[in-house]
Length: 139
View 1 (spheres, helix red, strand yellow):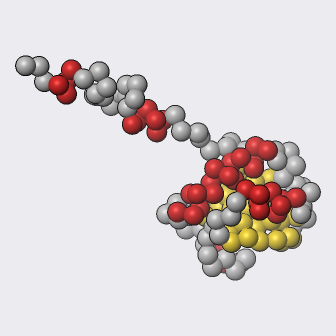
View 2 (cartoon, rainbow, N blue to C red):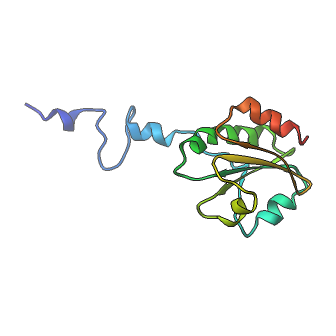
View 3 (cartoon, rainbow, N blue to C red):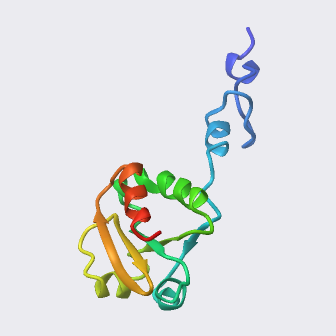
């Protein structure tokens, strides 16, 4: 009797995915928006504070579940508000100086900047409607 694993058309071997394979589903996931700017401690003042557009900064960390949950919303907002507001992300683990400067004690924290000043701040995983309301304060 033939080995059912090696003759199963849905079995993936040698790292290649076949239709229905879990890896195929993962590979087809929507990628992050290329409109989201990734900033760090050294370029924050230039890219955010010195921006000619209002800027919403998402302070996050890769291990943070709520940060991951709002990530797709941040990407959508970057696409929807392209040209009217700058959307940026800062990894707080890799860049501790800037979050400390703004008193960030919990993540995700989103800070809205306009004309180089903090206009408003939200902490926690909030819905898209709340973020749209926040952004509209700067427009």
